[in-house]
Amino acid sequence: MKGAGGSSGGIGHFFIGLLMMCGGFYLLLNAITVTSSFGMGSRLYSVNTFGTNIGLTTGMVLIPFMFGIGLIFYNAKNILGWLLSICSITALIFGVISSIRFSLRTMTSFDLIVILVLAVGGLGLFLRSLKTIERDNTNER
Image (cartoon, rainbow, N blue to C red):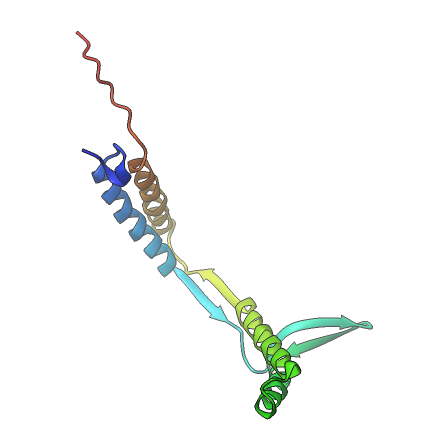
């Protein structure tokens, strides 16, 4: 009988590893806190020119976007309008993504060890179940 993935590995190892891996990664992702400092007055990008630091805020990114939308509504074939709109939205998306902060919540070392053993141990069992197991068919007397 073939095991997990068509190999001779164990089906039990497959399901136990999958269950451990899912539980461990769920607990790990549940322990991560995601925050953002994004706002209409927050600084997206900084430009150093002539010894001064100029900050480009999110509101400043929306100004070319508004002009681009106006040009698109006036003439839908206007390349400048499309270019302004697409570049502004792209800068806004990159600014939002770059302002995201990930942090691990406070937990005991036991909690972290349990999470890591479940996640990595389950991954090891899962991958071991997909490996072909060599069986010794010789009968020794």
